[in-house]
Length: 294
Image 1 (cartoon, rainbow, N blue to C red):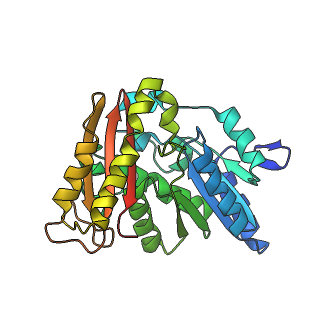
Image 2 (image 1 turned 90 degrees about the vertical axis):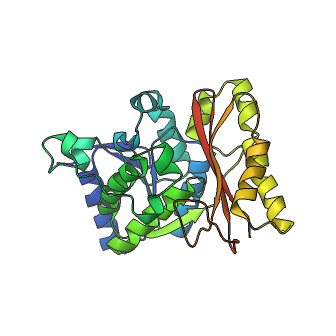
């Protein structure tokens, strides 16, 4: 029997099994499904994905699950923002039809010992950058997203471009599975240019001011590109110089060819370029990126 809580027009389902049944029922009725996977602590960036999913499909569903498999640092998992009550109110107001949650055991019912979950390698697009500074993170993402894709089935799934390397990994997974269709949506920013992130609420006011230097660094790389610079190392140095502020610890500020991903920076002149930054500001790790050639 399904355990269902009805929040006016939005359905909340307590397990992936219930969600799978609901999604299957919708398809049998001829509905098209839009799906937005989240870890909660929703902001305008998430809600923009829900709005687009709702506009491009006849029904829209969202998952809220903080995936422990993608946290290499237990403290980061424990301090990750959580506000499910607020999330549900926001989703209902945005026109979401169904939201589902679950726990690790429910996503992996065949595993008696959760420490023995078969972790899926992130694949070629998981090499470098995030892999270097968050080893195992993208493997954990791919592992849970595979279960989310199975749960929802054939659908359109919406991801934000802010997590650029992640979008490449999940796109590879979708191609291997044969579904779903991946829709990558533009990064939503504050007026200052700071990319919206659930972690932004953990920034002090001073740290937020420092974090607002990340986007100008990306814009400086674009300016250099528009001026004719095509060398990855020089573009990286431009960003690093912009981030040379007390209180910002740069993990990487590098450029990749988005169509020919490499673990290390390209050594030949670039035809296409994605600038990517990861930095720690105070205790908070932030990432951002910008396409330079478009």
